[in-house]
Image (cartoon, rainbow, N blue to C red; front, side):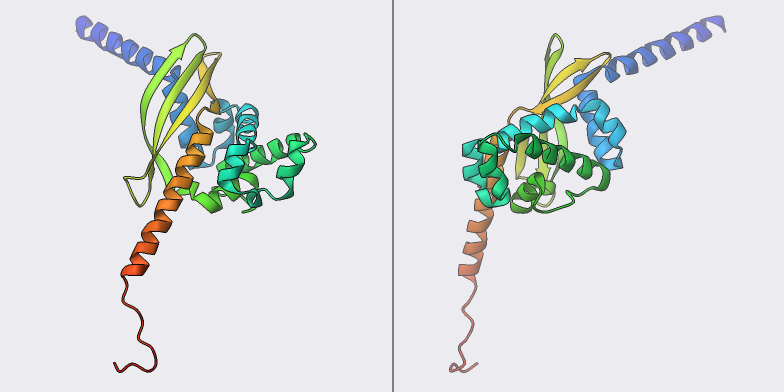
Length: 215
């Protein structure tokens, strides 16, 4: 009887230790952030995502000339031109941060003309959902997690997202989306493909009969 009791205690300790280790991994942090978005749990989201750093990095990427060229200046309006002078960069960064907070809390961007709301309304970012983690690497207190997002209606349309991570105490935080400009480029590419496919479908449809033709 004692042997069984000792074995049971050992199994419990090993199992508990295994779970504790899992909570200290970068992939656990990404999973927690994903679940927090689903549950609209801003407090948990902010534990595993450094919102200020992520927002600042995203704002920098959105204001790069190649990204603006892909998106079109109309998405951000007058803020884009002003930001190049450095006058409104802090304001733009705060708007990106507000967008992220609002999305986590309410599941939408609040305003279509907000920075991330504008990108989403044009490129349909929200149509891509978390599929799986495909890669994890760490070096000291810095890590990287690669995630695949899948289009909810077309599984062959996937996005590769690379999160940069930083270890804080006994857990990890997302600090940036390393390939954010490339993601924008891929979304633009998919948008163009959709437009071409729609054009092909339209050209395949029989022409509507004119009023002079007999039916």
